[in-house]
Image 1 (cartoon, one colour):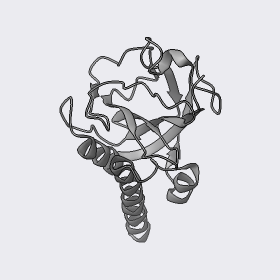
Image 2 (cartoon, one colour):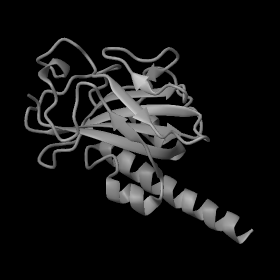
Image 3 (cartoon, one colour):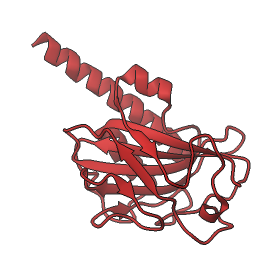
Image 4 (cartoon, helix red, strand yellow):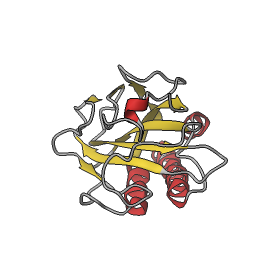
Length: 188
C-alpha cells in the first residue's frame, strides 16, 4: 500500500508539473517542458527522429512559411505499454519573443510510430494553434528554435477537432506518461 500511495503521489506531481509547463506555453510565457523536468518527474523518455530534420540543426525552409510542403515527417519509439494515445505539439521557445504553438495533433493510435510529411494519421485530430488556426502553421521566425515534441498518453485527449489550445494542452498534460523531443535551431 505504501508504494502505491508513493506512486500515486509521484504521478500527480508529474501531471501537475507537465500541466503547468504546457499551460505556460499556451499563455506565451514559457516552454513545453525540458529534459531536466522529465528527469525530475521520472516520466519515461521517447526517442524522436526524422528523415529530414536533425536535432540541433536548422529547420529546412520547405517546412517554414517560405515553403509549401507542410509538416515534416517524424518518427518515434519507446512508447510505453500503457499508452492509449499519442499527441504531437510543435512550438517555438525563443526567450526574446512570446512562445507560440504551431501545431497540435492528438488522439493518434499508440501503435502508430510515424507521421508522414504533410499529413496526419487516420483517426488523429488537430487542435487550434496560438493564432487560432487548425492544422500545421509553418514557423516564420528564422532565428528561433522549433520543438517537435511527441507525448505518449494514458488515454485519448477526447476533444473535438479544432479544440481550443488551452483545453488541448491541459488534456495532454493531464495524460502524459512519456515524451521525447526533436529541436530544430533556426530556419534554413
